[in-house]
Length: 460
Image (tube, rainbow, N blue to C red; front, side):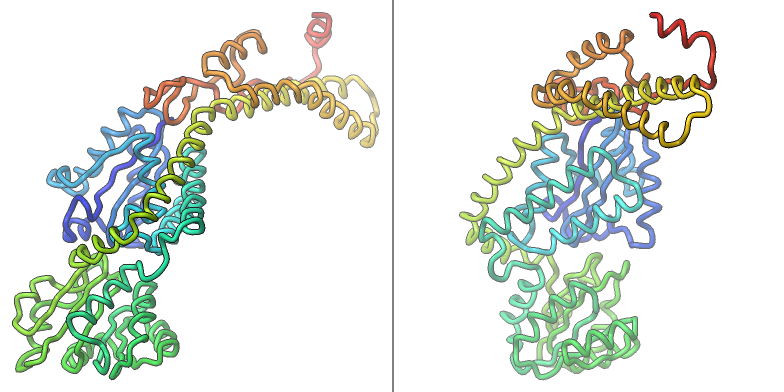
């Protein structure tokens, strides 16, 4: 197995490109199905936020997988996408994942939303069986590292979210005290915006949404007034500042709508769009009385934030380096655990087969005695194998050594009958081509009835 990733982020593309990549929730399962039909890819986790679109993936053939993943992206989004895409493998992928979940590679260094977003991405992929023995433990480790970084450093102390930066930006250009604010959206990002907006002594706050129940709940929490989207133009005419944060897959606020709403206006109307894809047509910035800002305009704040937290970034990177080294060793020895699992299955089949053979030789055997014999055989096998398994786990061997051991132990070198591969850098060679190891369930056949071969095998 191998580990790789492909990504388009705020560092490599503009917001329009990121908006193009966005997958609506209703289309996500179709995207996964198409992706996992791609040659060389058997596991995947898709991470999309307002600042990044990333696919972490794994499979049996790295060269095929990487080539097909790039083709998949080009076929889906066009050849022009190639200039924005970054592909990474093994340690690069792990290091990037750990940095992202620790919010070091975020537009706003230290922001907390990414941890929950990564967790949601993993839960979705896991629930729908899109992850397995490679990506599942990697993402679990990443989430642990993200929590550790936040608990052992001050990387997330203070205002570090996109939402807080957006409110600060609005207040800088159009001081919020006494102003009428319109908030379009009632989701998580909108709630975070409302948390910060409500810290100011506002003239009023109006909330626009499409789901009546969500709007009522939102307005009750933030003591705001609700209006339907059909009345958004009238709301814009009265507003001083408008924030948008919906999950709508297309533009909600067109230039024509804004132009109509500000006709005859002399005071500035500030529009701040932190949605992904964008809620507001960016050409509204061409209008005279409009102050328009999107996520891209938060870069300046981001850079200042990054400089202020540089010491915490260094501390966080040390934690990531330590965890990366530890997890790298675990991945390199994954073939040990898969070998032990296969060995346990192999010996269990022998135990079960021999127990069945013995039970068939005893007439009228009562259930209690059968249970005792089953417990006895399990106990004997467990005690016989205990020290051997412990020694193998405590003294990791290379994949070739494990194959040699299999040859000696089984007499034919086959515990399972199927070749597999080790993630990352198989056979002890970092980033190498997929190697072979036995990892699949046993294919040995159980006896179907008593025959004379039983006695012959016993004599041997």
